[in-house]
Image 1 (cartoon, rainbow over the protein chains, first blue to last red):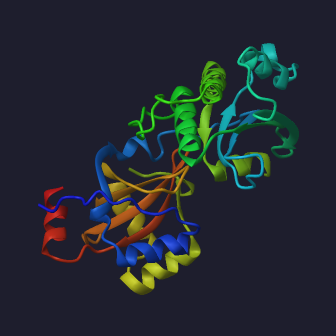
Image 2 (image 1 turned 30 degrees about the horizontal axis):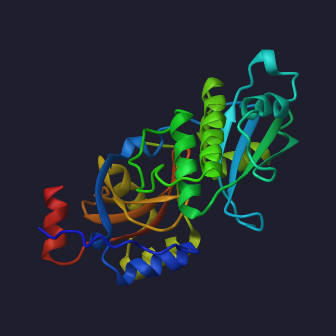
Length: 199
Length: 96
């Protein structure tokens, strides 16, 4: 039996680049040994019929990062919060975490989900993270806590050695994810979110 | 398992290359992917989307390796699909 060589594929910039990579490299050399049911990945999350809020969590690896990593969540806003400014509601969850000035900002815009549907609000949460690994970990963490995906194996960079600010950012991700979880948020794919926000 | 088609994406350029280089239609790749009960994680530095390998069979019975990206929200994107070559790879397919 052939064993994986434990290689790690590079970061790909495009589908074409990745296709060509696998033309010349044996995928067996890059397997981690972690096996998961396909059902935990594909189709595991039913598309919401009418979310009235899309929350986009965007993680920048620096203030100048123009290509932040992001994940989207669909939320049916509870009637008790229907008329409230959700930026304020979410801000309350994050108060006291002592995040630095540039780590979180909010924007909220209205879209329209078609002639028969009401407006769809879009809440964008921007956050700074230390690097690519931290961004990846944070997105996975948010998705897990929000309840839309099964827990994934830690990627290797744990809490040891975290700076105080990294810990605060971690706590902020947890707070946001719990906020989403409490509202039965489900994770949306890029295409789903786009279809809801730009019908 | 039959899923809405929008859950599985294949870029037009990948669709064309799979056909030209491996004689694999995107429908076959999707069938092979959906026939796999388990998939195995592929180590990749690409942030935000995990990679997996599915070993499956479309309706025509051909064995295919399908490398795909987990795009989140239950959606995936097929990166490539091809017939495993070599005795060892075919053996792994039979074992799985």
